Image (cartoon, rainbow, N blue to C red):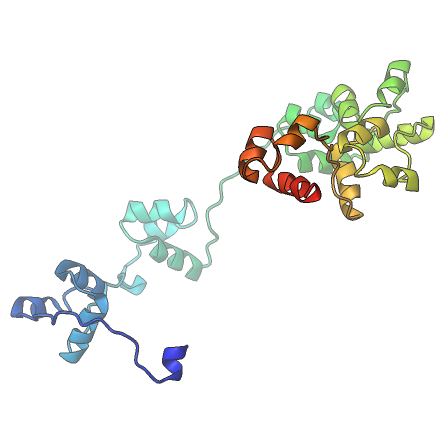
Length: 288
């Protein structure tokens, strides 16, 4: 900025002049400027500038043969759409674009592979609605969407609306644990677990009362999470939303540690005591 403000030109290193021999000039226009520059060990801009100065036209890559120039026989036209364009192009020895152009101009649709169809047997239809659609798809080989369409066409309700979960004593005891554990051991969906807890009056977690919020930051998140029956991440998020710093257990200073403060630099004392230099400096200033 200061150089521009004073109107001083930028530094430009003076390079050695390029010796344009007849051999070098003869290469201009025979290939792309970048390729000639690589061969001569020069910058591409230098090659382009010299070529334009001598009014030598640039080298253009060979264009593809025109699609109009190829004579299609009736037998070859009959093959359009019966196989992929790339495969037909390889068989005829022409480009894929020529095949695609000819197929589109003649109004022939592209070749598409036929999907394999599976029959719906009586055994598979009997499974619809009695187990999750994803499980039926795994057994039958259909996609999940295909199973859903078939079930909807037959007017069969989904698995969640088919049966009723019986709350056995073991299940009631399990519902007091985390939802992840209930899903892993029973295979129930989160909605089913929530409905069962509401019907049985199982409250795994009380609302965040002022007393609970007051404990945040004064106790470890893991301890509060175990007591409330929730994850430590939930406690961490609640504490973060209230701007409360995490709990840090304070380590008391023993008399022998206090005697070491000030005897050596704070960094050396902190390394011997296993404390931070800031903590040692704070104690040293407080004890003057």
